Amino acid sequence: MNKAEGVPYETAVLILLTLSRGAESRKKILSALLPGPKNCNQLSRETGLDWWTVKKHLPRLMKESLIQSSAFGNSTFYNLSSLGEETIRALQSSSGKNSDLKSSSDQP
Image (cartoon, rainbow, N blue to C red; front, side, top):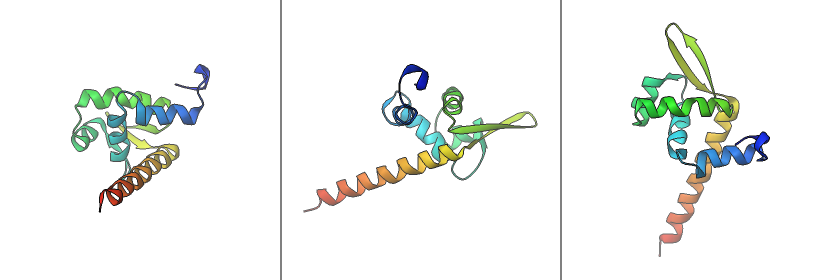
């Protein structure tokens, strides 16, 4: 899902975080990183996802430049890149708008 495959980058990220298998897990990981860096164990506990699931999604998020990693002793910590922060905030605000619209249209 990158430019080499003929898909615009923005479209690839949108698919990665909304339509593809694992999109909900990746959004949980990005949301968990909003407050600051975390390691894989912390992400697993905070998101409720299995450790292996978190570990599997991290390289894909790094490949799309949504997160960055840094080593600290024997641990690796992950944090949002500026693109990742901008992307997850946009997704959260658009999903909030959708739920606001839905709830207001449900009312008599």
